[in-house]
Amino acid sequence: MTPTTPVGLQALPPLPAPRRLGPLAHRLRAMQAVVAREVLRLLHQPARLGSALVRPLLWMVVFAAGFHNVFGVAILPPYETYIDYRLYVLPGLLGMVALFNGMQSSLALVYDRETGAMRLLLTAPLPRSWLLLAKLVAASALSVLQMLVFVGLSWALDVDVDPLQALQALPTMALVAFMLAALGLWLSVYVRQLENFAGAMNFVIFPLFFISSALYPLWKLRESGSAWLANLAQWSPFTHGVEAIRFALHGQTNGLALAVVGASAVVATAMALHGYDPQRGWIRHKKDGG
Image 1 (cartoon, rainbow, N blue to C red):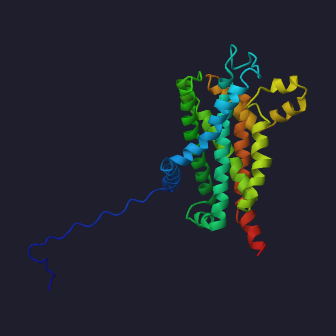
Image 2 (cartoon, rainbow, N blue to C red):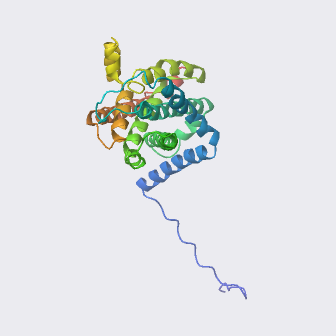
Image 3 (cartoon, helix red, strand yellow):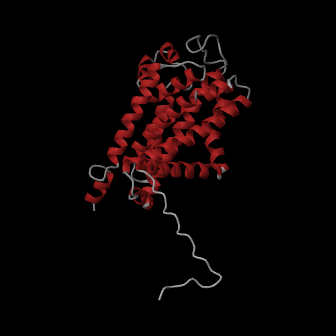
């Protein structure tokens, strides 16, 4: 006997086989999911975005107003004439946004590690280095988004910034944001507990920001007799990140600064991946410690 189809019913066509993604497409989709998750979380938390911009806004409104006539800015590249101090300090404050966001991402990684979420993420069926790279790209995307909002707020405060040149500076800002996020990821390898993050703030974030050209030109340090401090600032990757953004906002390129930022990003990423290696990094040390 042969099976028959009941009256009034027709045989359904077979379902198409699910389309399998290639290895590269699978990795890109995973990165897209991580980045989209972080961006949506930020957009759904306006208080978080506002709190990230309060600090640089206070520096722009209060600090720049108080020191407007104190720090004279010489006519040095990329400037062709004397400029308003708020325009000078804008790249440094954009660097501040990226710096603190990169370190906040580091703090989130420390928290995820304490709660076990980081171990769960790293056991996903993807290369560990790719998952960490996705976290870096997500942190960089958040930084760039916050930097763009701050540029818009600065323009609204009558800072003489060209919106078109600010958009053209996006690749430079993204590179600086990635470098600072990589430094944060590297820092998270050694900060084992949330309680220790305050020390990292005092010994990493603040020295990077203040020993740089973010708030004052380095020639002012030499003029005041602090040549050693100016020389130390020239070795800081954050200084070169600020200068790269400064030139990019004026439609120019600082090759040395970009080279230092790129090299620092590569080194910090490599050291962070080494630290999260289960055979050599913090996971192995944790197992050895019991």
